[in-house]
Amino acid sequence: HFEGPAHPSTTDYSKYKLVSLDVTNPGRVAVNLTLGLGDARGFAMTFKAQAAQPGAMTAIQGLLDEARNQRLDLKKVQYLSIAVDVTGHSQDPTLYFDNLRLE
Image 1 (cartoon, rainbow, N blue to C red):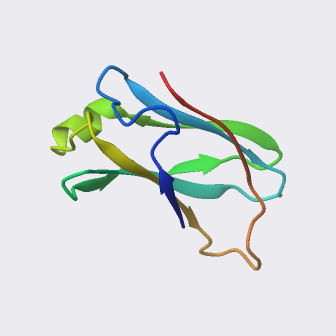
Image 2: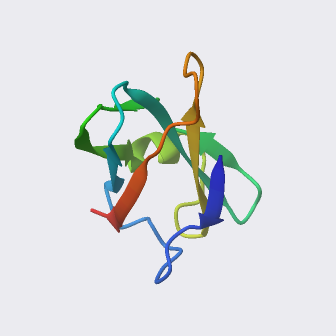
Image 3: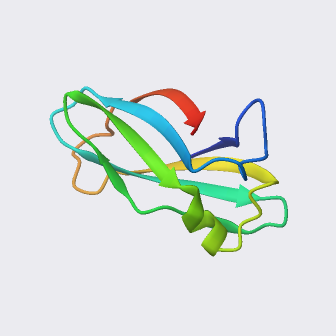
């Protein structure tokens, strides 16, 4: 589980539709990831889990309309979290994260 600053240049996600990042999975098995967001009031939510496909780069995305529906204050996002599901894996997977962006 990783939790860090929402985005280095802004905490206001209200003008965007997606939060996205590219994940490269060099392994042989798909790995499920869950993105989450938290706001300045302490509200938090997670997006539906998505699979980083083996031997490929996958764009993992969160629809910000889902966050709006969960009462998250998208003008004051405090953190982005990434949870990696290792259930069924014999060892911790290796993943490469790149290009965190708001679209």
